[in-house]
Length: 334
Image (tube, rainbow, N blue to C red):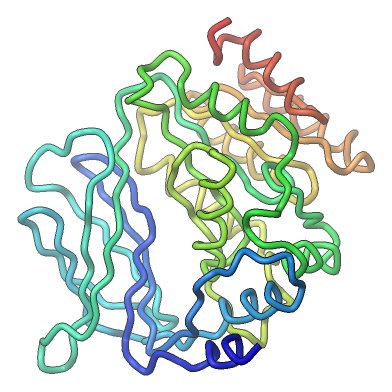
């Protein structure tokens, strides 16, 4: 009990958090945050409700460092940038030399007014192999059981579960692993991008959940950081925010063929229909998990509009149905 209380103590020093980035030689992107302080958040994978509530609460105890001078180091390149008002930063640059496919280390340093390094964060950038497909997937109610449409049920999942006890839908891991390894060598998997309305506060929580459940490694694009007083509003964002995050991925890979995964608990069908209308040649297929039967007719109408762009669609309840569809259209080798 005492140990949990002491963990509320803040780290009164600047810290840099670097998230997985992505790109290719001519367009590399990495995101992160700079904090003046943040609560220690070492996860204790407990079934104890109080332990899980305390850990979740600490993820939202942060104080961003606004307009901090930053320096990114990528191999022999140095790129300068400043954090935004909420501590968020985005580096976007062109590599000086060709970058091979795979994961690459990147370092971001926070500099004080004297130009001295006050904190360092390390991350990785994913450069996809030249493969047939890339996959963009929602998380809540597409991969994880979240009950996103009902805030009290969503919060209940967050509070009573830890990243290892949160449930994924049956056969999701099987489907995504098959897609990651389809038509390519095991050492050169197809790229995955996970786009969610969840906040950056939950980044480590989500990464742990995905790795524990053996889902394909990928880059996450999440929602704006929230402070502890807004914890009960977690997962709520506008239609436009998620649309913009998906569009950034398509802009970074203009020649890539994409497959989308989402659900009809909120706005995924409408978002994907808007993207399909604007980028029909970049979208191969759209998969929507039917978690809200009351929206099935509305979802079917949106998918019909997508199919008018010569894009395959699949409305499914169980991932085994989606796997069968992926085999039928050739995404997965039979």
